[in-house]
Length: 453
Image 1 (cartoon, rainbow, N blue to C red):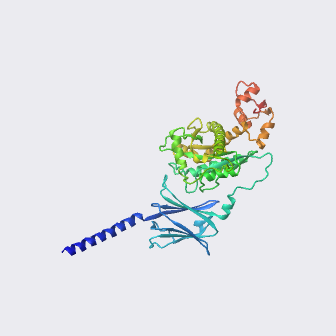
Image 2: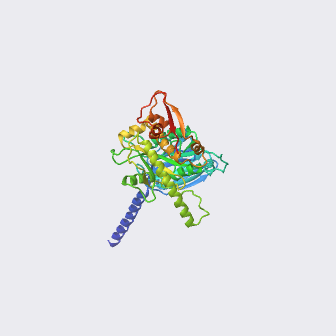
Image 3: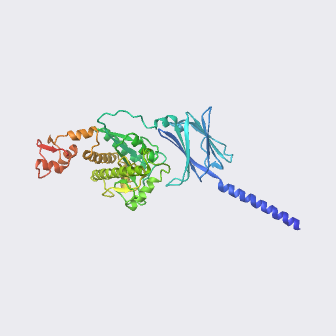
């Protein structure tokens, strides 16, 4: 009886060990719930939405070119409609075909058949907003890697254009905020940015560059890197605000703060924008030949000058937006947005309205309102550069050579405000130069239009 009892106890212990192993194995297993693919000019991005973080391995194979992704103890929660993807699903990507291991296998293997040599990079992202854990695979084409190198130095003409870098926020797998009517922030801000770029390029002496021209995502540091490589004079990031409730409304302008945000709202928004990009380093300021103390002093001086210019320009933009859109705050706010941390380029972030407010969401979807917002942003930037034109630019020469007064004959339908806007001077300065006591004008009246000192 004693022997039987001991054998029974031993069997029970063995069974318990097996059960615990099965439970542990089940706890360690995870699944891929969804796969998203995004193409941009520099890379192809695959995003695997996973139930839990999972270690993975990558390795390349040749003849034919393939990238193999192994995920231990992982399954596909929803088997794709086909055992492999090809054709239109992979248009404009570096991938010809995607194959998966059998659903019966305990480990998941994903094979990417490639059409060109790529440099893969992978990383895990923690849950944020509507997304859970993610495994991200970036495939950088060789041509993209080569084109990302800083351009060779060229001889510039004496009078160059003022370069305005325009950054539509979010993009691709990062939709930004989503309005109650299912309006995506990434879509609205791209439309406003493209309208702004068109207005900039139509103005002699100005040139616009867009950090992204389609629906794809760029890391925040990459956005400022593009502006720096293009020698931008200013960096403008376009966004659409959101809050936990539908009540807040109005446009805002932000500049960088070295000590944090100026209000609880600004701190919340800064956290929302920053957490979309969990990878990045320091800015690309060349300080290799400076010691730590000198580098710190130079960066501090550069950031101080850049911040001062950002605040002044931001206020001009707010004043230009005020007649066409309610302001959330009447002065420029400051917050620690990653995208504004460029010590050598004045940078502002324009929140064009609250997409979480149903009324403002409808306005932001309107092409007419998008055009008005774009025009207001450019009017503010233009006004700033009229007072402080960058040396060596064609615009600086234009400002310097402007006559003290210009003459203008009033035509039918003209108003004082329209004339002031056309010549980019204030109504009061026109009234003062012509001793006008009211805004009334008559057809054929000769006006002296004062220049800007």
